[in-house]
Image (tube, rainbow, N blue to C red):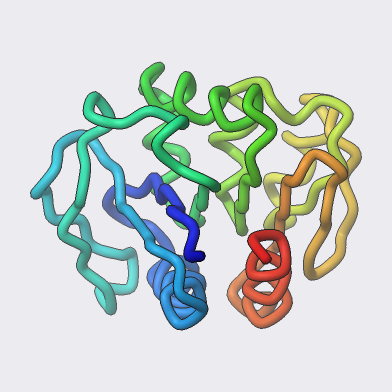
Length: 171
């Protein structure tokens, strides 16, 4: 039975950090629902290779509606972390102990949601210091699995390992 994966994303996301996991999830029979400010908005990746028509607005969704959360990198997580609705949404996945998948700059959203303390994590190098300062157990590896169900990865070159890890977490 396929799982429903919420994906929080806005303009200037890292194109392939959305498209590659999304394609892997869909191929495995899962459903990917994009969430931003408002349903129907169009958001574009920082490279211009991907444009997404948003499925749901943040005010229409609840963590209870989904089985897991995906946070692509790029400038998107930095923008989303300024909105308390997205922080509350992310916290809901943590509180419900549902899997969270974040790559590259994605952990910035997790830092502001205050869900990283004591968690084994990785990210793009420049976010690593922020993770350490927020109490995460930072590890420079292509993919890091925390016992909580948190799966993190560093950069687009790590996508094969990231995609495998998220599919394994949903199996």
